[in-house]
Length: 431
Ligand SMILES: Cc1cc2nc3c(=O)[nH]c(=O)nc-3n(C[C@H](O)[C@H](O)[C@H](O)COP(=O)(O)OP(=O)(O)OC[C@H]3O[C@@H](n4cnc5c(N)ncnc54)[C@H](O)[C@@H]3O)c2cc1C
Image 1 (cartoon, protein in one colour):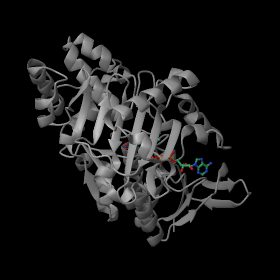
Image 2: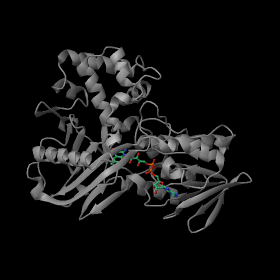
Image 3: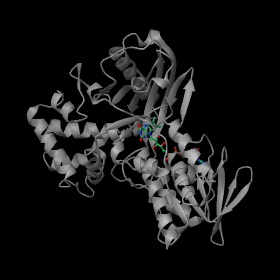
Image 4: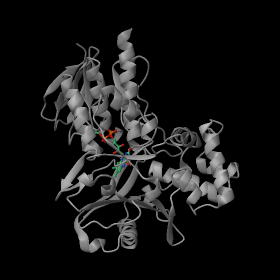
């Protein structure tokens, strides 16, 4: 039986491992840290905090939906209520333009601009708007003389979906590709009941039911090519030899391994690209603070708060509440402590304003000052890592993860690259 090693057990590694095991391959999955990578959840004093991923955008259009169906994963979705999503605007809250009703009600743009924005949405969905290669969305909006408030709204949306402080730098082709799919969604934002750990546990279940082997706490340090097979070594000098290999670890971590020279040179440039970074502040409160909203976006400071327990009471103890605040960070300032302190102050102000009394109810808190949301940021001058090096090595070496080419953004890139590789290797088997 053909053996496949998957190095890295985040969402991408687990997905590709489960898909290949189900095809009948003998899969070995190696992970250095906690299985699930940036999508693990942590329970503190009865409050469940996601390390990273918290929402799926456009789940009805997503590759994750296909993976769930293919692998028969048991996932319960909790859909975001658009009527409870608000934007801060001129000192008060207004409807977030997250869907047609939100757009109709919102004050962030006026009536004429609403029509113009709707026209942009229609053109995007119909493929009439595709962007221009080598032109950023900011440049494109200027070239096309799109009205200021309409442009601002198009960029605000991109900030939320790409988690970026510089939406204007997204390549215009990437922007329109992404929204062609997302504007068609009827499920703009959804959460997984019980947190993302549930998805990780489900993928792990399918992998094991299909005879896959999980090597936990196993840090791979070297990979050699020997007679068209691959020998892996971990830091305890244990060794495994396999027919095919999948790299499911970020390029920055990949370059720390001793690798065959062609692989090393292939990934090298990608290891230096800028990631998408955020500051995350999670709080567990008790008792619950009732509000008429579950999401508030502060567009001036580019940060948002979500009442996750509004959707999923199981993540907090009885009458408790989990709020997650995420502040998008500008890469050039992340090393500056004053910048991060300012972000924390902005977060506290947001909570004081919309959740008065939260400080007295604070039971547990967790701050991540610099979390990597996506390993390679979509901005001009940066590209994603291809899933295959070339036609010849593509039969035995592949790459998956949110740093790879694929559909969507964030974890959707992990799922779509995993699905692409599993599908390509299944077809190759058939010939
Ligand atoms: C704060 C935050 C908020 C987010 N919010 C969202 C969201 O709302 N929606 C969304 O879709 N996505 C979101 N994301 C992004 C999402 O979490 C990631 O896209 C996804 O988890 C990436 O999975 P991955 O498998 O591609 O990579 P990773 O999770 O980084 O997996 C890589 C794995 O490789 C392992 N590894 C590294 N080196 C070695 C080695 N030498 N040997 C063996 N194993 C090794 C690591 O232990 C890790 O498990 C968020 C992320 C963060 C941090």
